[in-house]
Amino acid sequence: MPQDMCVPCEEGIINIRVGAIILKEGRVLMVRNQQAPYLYSVGGRIKFGETAEEAVIREVREETGVRLPIDRLGFVHENYFIGDSPKHLGQIYYELSFYFYMKTPADFEPVCRSFTEAAQQEYLEWVSPDDPRTVFPAFFRTELDPDDKSVKHVVTDERRKAVPEPVPTEAAGSAFGKKILVLGCSGSGKSTFALKLQEKTGLPLTHLDNVWWKPDRTHIPRNEFDRRLEEIISADEWILDGDYSRTYEVRIKACDTVIFLDLSEEECLRGITERVGKARPDMPWTEQQLDPELVELVKHYQSKNRPALLELFRKYPEKRVIVFSSRQEADAWLAKLPPAASLAAPKQPENEV
Image (tube, rainbow, N blue to C red):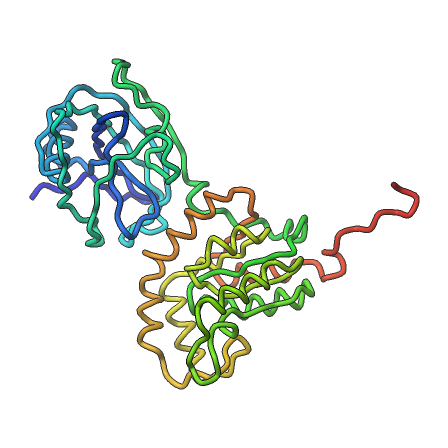
C-alpha cells in the first residue's frame, strides 16, 4: 500500500495533505472524534504516487461513503503547529495542505466510516460559521466563499498557540497571581510543587485529593465536591493542586495563573511508582501498592487530558499559563521566585490619592 506523505526530519515532521470543502445550506462538513477537542476538515495525507486531486476524491469517498467530484482548488495552506496525536505528540509539524471545493448534490447524505491513527471513531457534522467550537483550519470560519474563483494562499503558525511557553525564570515574580492552579498528570509532582509554592508565596493551599477522598478510600458525593470546590475558588487567594479533568474549565475561569507540569508519560509512571509506601500530605492514606487504574490514567493522559487542557488555554488567553516540561525546570523557577513579602501588591504612599 502506498505510504502517506508524512516525512520525519531532524527538526520535526513534514506533512502533505488535502482537505475537502463540502458546503450545504451555508454549512461546511467537518469531522470530530472523542479524543480531539476541536473539529477538523474532511481529508487526509496524500499517498505517494497520488496527485492532490486523486487524494481528495479518495479521502472524501473513504470518510463519507460517497464519491464527490471536484469543483476547483480553493486554498493552499502552509502551517506550522505542534502535534497532539499519540504517535507524534509534541513534535513540530510543517504542513502543506490543498483544500478543494467539492461539487455537492442536493441529496448528499454522508455516512462516516473512518477512524483516527489512534483507532478513535470519527463522526461527521454540518457546522455553521457561528458555531462556537474550535475549527481547524481556522480560516474555514471566515474565508469560505464558493463564488470566489481565486486560489488563496494562507500561511499560519500555531506553534505558540498549541503549548504555552514557560515564563522566563527571571520574570517569575512579576505580576504574580493570587489564584493559582497546579495541573498535570498523576506522578508529575503537582503536590510537591504546590507545597514549595505555598512556602514561597504564603497563599493557602488545598489538595483536591484531600477534598474528594476519605481515609477509608471512599469518596464524597460529586455534588458535595462541587460545592466545596466552589467555596475554595470563590476566595480571594488560593493555590489549588489537583487535575480532576471534569472541573478544568470552572477552575481555569476562576484562576489568574495556571502552572502546568507537562512531563512525559515515562516520568509520570516513575513518579507514581516511587511514591508507593510513602506518606503524602495530599492524600488521606498511604498507597501500599501500585494502582492499575492509576497506571491506565497516566497512560491515557497525553491523548485525552492534555489536548483538553491545551484547548482551554487557547480559549482563555487572558490567563497566565506557565508550563514546565521537567522537574528541574520547575525547581529552577521556584528557586528564583521572590519570597512572599515581595510578591504582595505594593501599598500606596499615604500622600497619594
